[in-house]
Length: 545
Image (cartoon, rainbow, N blue to C red; front, top):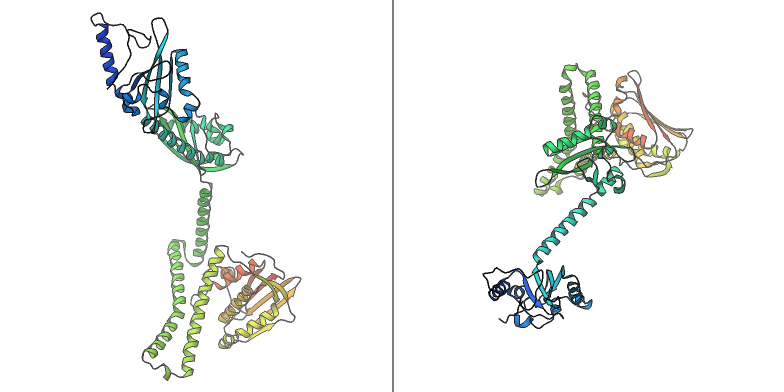
């Protein structure tokens, strides 16, 4: 390899020439120094003349830049620079600064022989002879690409973490100085607590606490606990900028340096107000439920069997529900099995038309019964979810009532009950027809079930903008204490009766009437039976529940 390097006998640099030991000749020292420079592999070390042309080359320069000594010596050192740097004459600028102040140092992208770029740390030192005349430059180059890539990855990671920290909206993520003042602020903190970063950074975090907590020293306690245990978790009321309160879940973590000294705190806050309200509402609901169970139990048995009564009520409902759902399924299954057997035996054609009609009629009755039960359960579900929508149309209630009586003529006949309807004049109003028909049908069916085969009287009339429906049966009657209970879900006041049902009809009826802006009430006596009175506005304009 051809080599040309620094000759200390012809020039010197205050940075590079050191006093020699008396026992070492200058020539030997210069040779050792030349060998040292040539053997260095991690640094590119070479000389360039005053105009920037390369005069020497070492192994490190060849390894870093890719050029051999023969390829590099004599070339201008700008071959290592990017096109952008050449256009702006950056290589010349570096020599000018080095000549002026003695040294130029920077980090930047350089180009290898194969065109790839590497991140370089370079130092250019001006070399002068004993008279102070500039004779050239020494340049030292180090490849810091790996460090640069690591720094870029760290920077990217930190930037991602910063953006994530700042963009998180569901959590208030802040850092506190050791004295409790706010150091950083993210979007979640702004959304939850109401302060802009410029309003709160530098302020004490006690601004978020109620006065009572501040007076009790809660802020100081939390920081102290975080220091002692490393982390503190707490739930409690906090204060927003506008003075409103929110229920917060807070975690404070002590941040320590490598020596274990606390240098800051991280605080993560989540707004749990909705959960708190839900919990409180649930507790209230449980409390109301317990109160209702207690009241119901007191009517039936002594206080020492309250739990057994609640279990009994549940078991009774499950028993009734399973029985009521099974009742229409059993005959339906039997009739279908009968038909299937005839089909398999190829004897279906031998059945009389009357027999087939009877089977299909029985199936139709079972399906209607099952459909009615399922419809009731679905209506309860819609009511509970607030999805009982009303499709309002204008129609004559008198005409509807008469039509329904005709539609239930067979049912009325089978119940052996005389039904009288009084509806003198047409009554035009705006309602959901299907739902009003459901109300009428539920009250009629109820009267037929419990009317004890005695006459039923129905009245339909209008008075001062309100329509009135009255259903009067002379049946079993309802005890005064149960007049409101009949409108509740799954209520069957006569457990010994065999009339069936889930105890949902009157509950659904009331919900439909109230959705129309109306009311329903019951009055009863063992002497004259029961009257259900419905009152609704003629021109309903609402949307339902």
